[in-house]
Length: 91
Image (cartoon, rainbow, N blue to C red; front, side, top):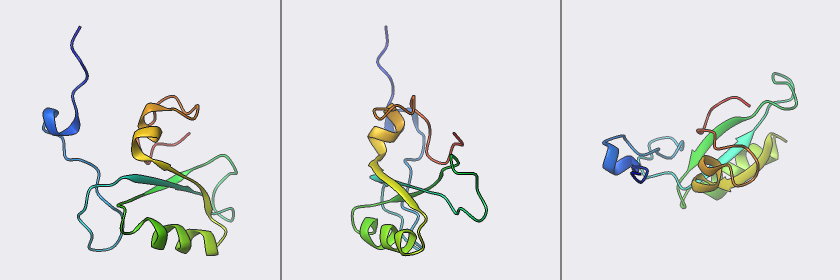
């Protein structure tokens, strides 16, 4: 059985930070929801590098949108019960 390929091995572009102008690799997934627009279970996602995690989290949190922050590896593996979704994928 072959081992799974990483993004670098497969030639895929690794996910990058959602902060404006940032091209750093993403490390964090910030799951959020605007209750005026989305159903309660809906999760939108932003990706963040180490440098922008706090800034992006604060931006969402002050508006009451931030639902959870997990590592990209946890999000992709489904370690918290999500069954391995890609960032940005609808529940």
